[in-house]
Every structure is written in C-alpha cells, then in structure tokens.
Length: 401
Image 1 (cartoon, rainbow, N blue to C red):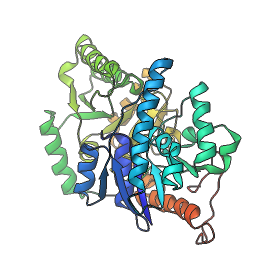
Image 2 (tube, one colour):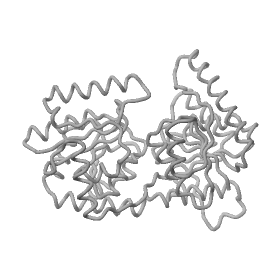
Image 3 (cartoon, one colour):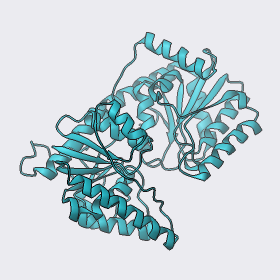
C-alpha cells in the first residue's frame, strides 16, 4: 500500500522528526513523503525515502478576517497543487502530518479521491475556528490520530467519536554501552564547554514562551545559589515567530541578571538529541500544556531521569515518583525540590533512570507506534480483513489501549 505522508512545511521540529521515524519503520505500507523542498525532504532522501517536492504556503491562525481570507486562499492553492500531484502517483491513502496539512488534503478530496488520515500533534484550536475544523473533519476525514489523550479531548464533536485514535509517539531503542556513554559524555561536554565532573540539567525544545525555558533558568539559579555544582544546557532555537526571538533575548538577559551566564549554555539547534540526553544528568520539561513531549521519551530511553510539568500529554508518559517527577506549571519551588533531590542522590537518580528506560521499552517504542498506525490504515483500506486487530474508537481510547 502506497501512503502519501503530507507535511505542509519543510522546517524540521518534533512533528517532522516523528514523521520521519514513522516512515522509516513502516513494515506493511510504503511511505511517499510530499512536502515543500527543504530540510525535511533532504533528511528523507538521506534515509532512502521516496519524496515528492510540492509548493508551500505558510499560513497563520489569526482572528483578523482579512488576513484569515488571504491565508485561506494561499492554503487552498497549495492544497489544490498537492491534490493534483496525488493523482499522478499510485497512492491509496493520505496521512496528513498536521492540522494545516490535513485541512488542505481534506478540502480537495473531490480531486484526489483518497481517504485522509489526520495526525494531530498539537492541541486543536478552540472557538469558531475549532468548530469549523471539527465540521470539516466530520464530513471528509476517515481517521484522526491524536498523540495523547490531551489532544484527543480537544475534539468534542459527537460526529468525530468513532474516528479518534490514540497513538503515542515512539522512539527507537538504542542502548549505549558503558564505554559509548562515557565517550559521548566526554565529547558533548567538551563541545559545550562543561566540566566533566559537574552536574548538568538540560532543557530541549523550540525557544518559545509556552515552553517556559525561564523556569529552568530560575531553577538552576536556586541550585547554584545553594552551592550545587550544576550547569544548564538550553538546547533549541527560536524560529517561526518574532515573539520567539524576543523570548530568546529575554532568556539571555535573565541568565545575566541572575549572574549565572557562565553556567548556562545556549546550545542552539542540535540533531544529536539522544547524545545530549545521555551526556546530561537530568532533563527538564517546563512547558505549559505540552501536547505530548517526545523529548521525554528520548531522554528516558537513555535512562536519563526527567522532571516535567503535570499537564497536557506529559502525565501519560511519566508515572510520578517512579519514572520521573511531575510538578505544577510555573512552580519553580517544586522544580527546584525535585532537581535538588535527584542531583544530590546518585542512587535515586540511577534507579529512576532505569525505571524510565523500562517504561519507554514497554510503551513508547517506534515499532509499537508504527504497528498501531498501520492497523488504522488496514482498517480504512481493507475493513473486511482486519487481521484480528480490534480498534477501539472512543474519546480517550484508541489502538494503543
């Protein structure tokens, strides 16, 4: 079965990394990646995936009716060109990797005449725009995959109840030997000018206000102030919006104001996330309602303990007090307490890291993710032969249950 993986942008972030991993590990379906020319297609070709370059249009959700009209016209044109390309390839199903890609694919179903699956990786919008999206999904989409129950619960229209499927993100399990971990630790710390004997916390993700990297800096300040030999790595870049650039500048100023600039490393974008996680002692996720948090399972796969906010899809990943710690959004006191405990007691840190690795191995491998997605494909394309796989299709339930 040929499946068109459709991504509306060539930029690479967490959603695109998940797409590439899923496509690379397909065992039954053959993925063909449709996207604008750029980094995403370059990476796909390096992995040996078949690609089709298509025009793009970068639209933004806005309450301004004129801008919304302009964006809709641009999206319609891009969607029409995509649908025209689909007809030239022997594609049986379209897998849209975002809401925007899904909208463009759904609007032109009358041209491509292929079943459409939406893979929703962000919390869906609310209000009038959200209702319009739900209406479109109800009349044109065969399945909606949500990466967490938090995302699934954002779709409230009764017409969508039997189309919703919960499929968590997954990662490849690549366990490093002790020697590999030692070499990795030395190499990454040398690159980031961090002493080998010091402790390191890392926060990884796009630099943007809702990721709340400031809380990690404030927590690091508390630890340093109380005599702990700790460094903070801030991994990620500010892109997509001007407010993200301003937030990037604010974080630098905050570190300077707290007089810990020499202990904070702004590392920018890094491809070697697993190596970064392995070289650190602790990973932080401070986001305001993270839809899932794939960096958590990346760190946990390397037996690196994690501390994260108790919101969004995060509680579906972490068993609080066992495979990591959860704290309330913005509560730096809680964040400091858990970080101080893990950094002060190596046995606690090691034990939690092992339980974190075990949880990823049992629930969040890329093989499990692909198996569930391919079961959805099979259910859509050949419903009469489901191979004994039972799909649960209710809000909060899915093929991952």
